[in-house]
Length: 407
Image (tube, rainbow, N blue to C red; front, side, top):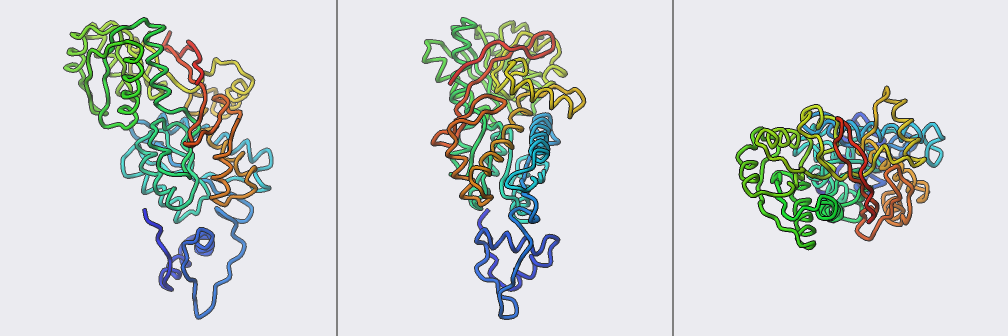
């Protein structure tokens, strides 16, 4: 999206007559979107509208996949984000103001992130954006935030390209070069695998990136990639590819996909007698993996961002608060990362002493140690989080902690 400069009286009048008229104009002035504001030969005076909403609130935007095929990701991250906002407000808010969260559903669909983020910025006037989990959807929204000077913090998009968009784009998760290397070393050192097959979703930036870094890491350890095959996310029949993978006789299969596809792949692999460990990344982490895959996902492994079994005081407090807020539900990594993204933003606003985009950006970039639920975070020069990963195994229908891997 290009900055739409409101330079004509007609443009000004149209915005002024909108639902959020005066505040929308005030936001436009603050962001430099108004070249001139001349009504009846004079400058229109605006008052009573603070950044991102009314004078007593700070409006923060969120976009998430609340419906569609990756809805459990979006719901979890949203629940964690909302819990953080509620806790911050209960403690007095930020800069003496309450935070207001404006959430939009991108429906797990390409095209929707651009629509909803444009709305959050141009119509609602949010000061920052939280989202998304999926890298493809973050990559769609990031240029819009960058062009408008609005800080965006992704809770869980691990593709390196996300923060490469520009200096207003951040994340609180590790990135795929690290995650891919973690799983390559796990395959080599823990599983003792010499030969691995890689099965990639070619429709997903996340999957393609993670596959690339896994292959690089595994071959560096002396391992051999014996089969490389593709699928399209949303497919239902993977038997032809899995038959070819079985014939290559791998010691393990790396499947960097999302839980809905992975569950079906595990089922069909078991049906075909492909009896080796399947391993993957954080896209596996959802209760739906077990609900769909049942016994077929038992024993397989994936890397992710935190474990509710970790036992640190911060994790223990978060898990208790989340379970209380959401009727006993156990928070997964996406919930923890959503929580961390909101807390990270609030911390930066406090340090910046402002909700001005450039000042928030600079405070976010200057973070050397932020104590998050998912571990201590340092923001590097690429605006990525440097932090540890954990490896979980599906065991007894639950995700069990295996090990922590430091950066």
